[in-house]
Amino acid sequence: MIDLVWLIPLFPFIGFLICGLGRNILPKAAIGIIASLAVLASFAVSLGIFFEFNGSTPAIIHLFDWIKVGNIDIPFSFQIDQLSILMLLIITGIGSLIHIYSTGYMSHDKGFGKFFSYLNLFIFFMLLLVLGSNYVIMFIGWEGVGLCSYLLIGFWYTNGAYADAAKKAFIMNRIGDLGFLIGVFLIITTFGSVSFAQIFPQAQGMVSGDATLTLITILLFVGAVGKSAQLPLFTWLPDAMAGPTPVSALIHAATMVTAGIYMIARSNILFTLSPVTMSIIAVIGLATAIVAAIIALTQTDIKKVLAYSTVSQLGYMFLGLGVGAYTGAFFHVLTHAFFKALLFLGAGSVIHAISDEQDMRKMGGLKKKLPITFFTMLMGTLAISGLPPFAGFFSKDEILAHVYEENKILWIIGVLGAMLTAFYMFRMMFLTFWGNFRGSEEQKHHLHESPVSMTIPLIILAILSVVGGFIGVPEVLGGGHWLSHYLAPVFDASTSRLSVIELSHVTEYMLMGISVAGVVIAIIYAYVKYVKNSHVPLADSEERSVLAKISYNKFYFDELYSAIIQKPLNVISEFFYKIVDKAGIDGFVNGLGKGSMEASKGLRLLQTGNVGFYIFAMVIGVLGILIYSFFKF
Image (cartoon, helix red, strand yellow):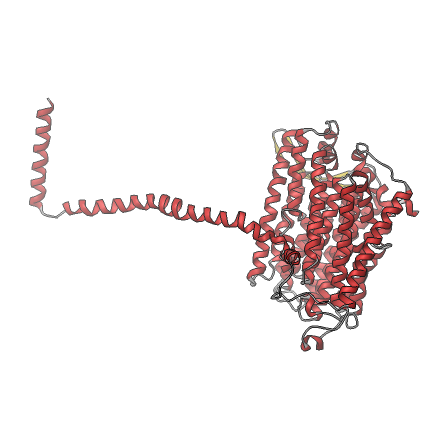
């Protein structure tokens, strides 16, 4: 089965070609089935590889020789190990559910075929990213998902704001991608290869803190910051909610934004030997988690709340990576894929039910009208809040336990972030499903549960959000942490170099208790405020407190970037356009043309057509030559 790994990206690529070329020919039902089956087929092959592979060393599947320049040999080959297998299952498993959901959600859209062709193409590039056995193939997938993200975010491109959001995502990703690309060049210079199998063994022989490794890892991290929406390059992701809701679930919750975490986890030995970079990752990750959580507290758009929640949870993953909790960070990638995809699809179900309304101030009382959507979203909210025994509890607790070992102050801030998460998520639930309906009578009349094609994926994801955490139950709770043992071969080189401080069971119980107690307090406070006191967020025209205004306006990051980057660049561009280009370069070139024209206007008057004048001019010329010759000699 491992030899058939090439089929995994091939199926979605074929689906992309069929849906793209046949978008105006094939019926919608056929396109939906073909696109969904393409990803399901990849999932089936991925499952077969998961059950077959049990090696302690990666399996390299060489497809063909690709690039040979001097001593550099870059084959087109795939690497199969525990990390890539789990990523394959996430991408194809969650991806297939989102494809099925989309058949119902996008059923009335004119661009149905184009949408599914883009989805399939995205899956293809994401699979290349995680399957590549070297950084070049990873980079192809990396750029490919960026392109597909641009196409999907701006899918409804006739709306100018949506098109701008797509451009913003594309440009901000390119900033990070430049760092990644320079990092790859430096890797080639340092190790003479881009293949993981040749780089990582060489790196193990280098000393911790090596300056070259530190520079390489910082550059790679810059790429991860752009792709995984960390400070300061995070503002593109909330704007990316302009795309259809299934896009938000697939790209900005379960797959693309986790590419940065995957890349660092794949390169773990390089980062382990770069303690300065690790500290930077931890601090930026935690700062992102807190800033995004504070912004989410006051947002009124249901998708924007989930978007900032995604940014915050990605921050926790980077925090885990920064303290060396590679398994914990990847564990959170898994659980986050379950509950965040569920929450986005649940939000899509709500939006679908109330005629594309996204403002939570115009919702309320929906739990009776949308019982399946309500119950499944409640499971996802409990999971992301970190309450036991839901999936998010185990992964977030593991990250926080490692943070406690490394730095108590970071742990305190991390627990505060977990409390904020619980508050803004239950704020979203209470505003959406409790109380009385605050929308229009027409919306109220059309309230209905989503079709089966949308609710079945919700139910499956809800089940995964409940039981998904049991693959990583810690020993203190009587588990064996299957995931840690499964991923051990991938992180073995790093594990042997990281200082391990074993927490006592009493300490672990204390940490869990504090975290859960904080979350419960946050939920109770949200209940009192939004259910018991029936508080509804202020209208945009109403005056807010200073802190609420800062949160609601997203810390003015966009305005800040506009003031210090966009406007100065516009001024410089205007200067170069008007002064350098138009007045200078164009003036010089056009001046030569005008000078020639003006000179020719005077000279052409000499050509009168009068033969007598020509004879007179010839005589004058001959006399001039004779006089010149006489005085010369």
